[in-house]
Length: 181
Image (tube, rainbow, N blue to C red; front, top):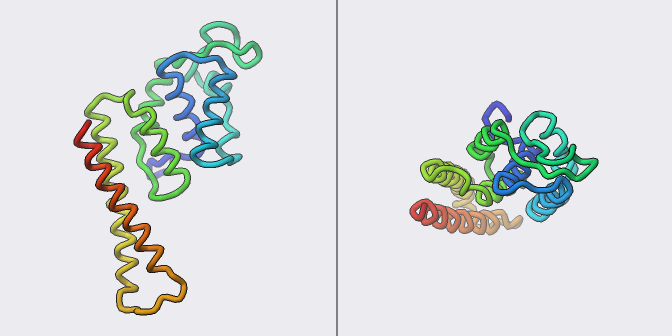
């Protein structure tokens, strides 16, 4: 993880793979396909996301072959106790505001949030709320610097108003989500 405790693209792949098999063991090829499918649908095809190997997770002791050897014989893979600790670390990492990777990490957190204890789920919802509030404050501040400018030929204020509205809706949804947890 970066010094600010946010996830790297490699760690997003790890989170997806570990979260996927934390629920049920899965064959190597099925896990690789599932991870590739989810990541490419959320973030689009990106080489930095597809380069990480599930075999590396096995080498690091985060997953284990429950039958067979690994990739060569399409072994059934399960998560180890070390893998569960790593999954929890990845699930509870902070987010960078509004990047494609952040969108992917949020989608992964929502997909696997139920694997955390209820209090940890609420804490993650709080982190998401905090992130959106920070991003909203940043955009409102930027928008405020254009308040006296009646003409905006580049349409930045329209774009900012749009993004602000989306963030306000997201914040409202996250607060309701937090209350349901």
